[in-house]
Length: 410
Image (tube, rainbow, N blue to C red; front, top):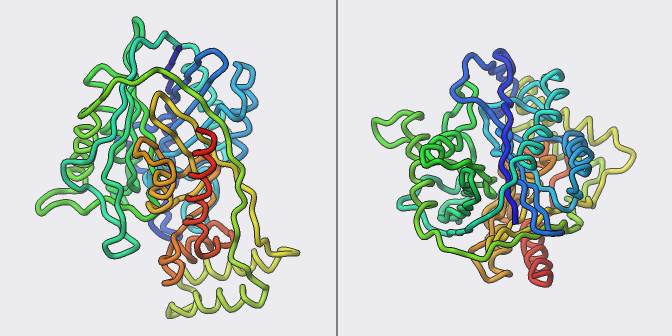
């Protein structure tokens, strides 16, 4: 087996608008806290291959994915061998327009595919023979995150990862935890958030590293402790994650495989009259139609009414794979914790990284309880993505369905 690591800088120019935290904020980047990167790991074991890339942005778009897939096929990687995820930082630029949440800089986006391709090529050219592989699933020593959508809702306490030694080159550390990249709040400095400090800590141990964010749609960092700043909290989160990652690293057989699953997502059934009522009810929560959130609801209404037919189903694909005894599932949503729990429950193991924000980000995949209370993820978030919300129960059904399909494959 051979494994390689590659990276390429993604830091945008100052003045670019940062994405997240609300509507029409015009939050421009005034400084750089840490550079943004595309990081990639390529693994080959005979005919079995996996190329996984993690990007220090909120999410990417399907055109970028298509560009990279087309290029990397020249290096022997098929579509079923490739997984692309984002760390979902809210202190980086947007690559696809979310209404009101950061203008897209076309020049930055047009150059993005080549940068990601360079990271992937660098990984392939860096390939070296694997000499040992270790995996870990270990709980945090103390909480760093909470469920922001449901009181006492589930929080995945585990850090998952792999440590891979190779001939004559630096080891590769793969780390996964589930938390929104929002610990810096509405900062005007470009940053990959707490994942940047994870890389800094692991580089001091002599490792190349890649961070894979889990399903974090309902998970935010805990606020800073008394007397601490957001910066203090960011470093604390990273140190706590790295500490858990380094514990209980256990040897496993070196192996790799990958593939893709097809699923159909059921959407909330909406007539055009339903759209009008939904938008009116959402906009009516605010004192004026001029309020930003009300504007976004009305823009969504216009978008939905312009369609010849409002969709009720959507075909999606889900990347999956395994490195050693660690499974990987990559969902194209800001999925909730419960979906990940259901996948692992079906597979009867905690050794599965269930990742969110894969490929083109399709918005939130909220659980039934969140939809029933018409919370942000259930409805308002669909406005900014200009999409039809998923039907109630789809997060749960999808988790069980993916878990059962992977159980058959395994």
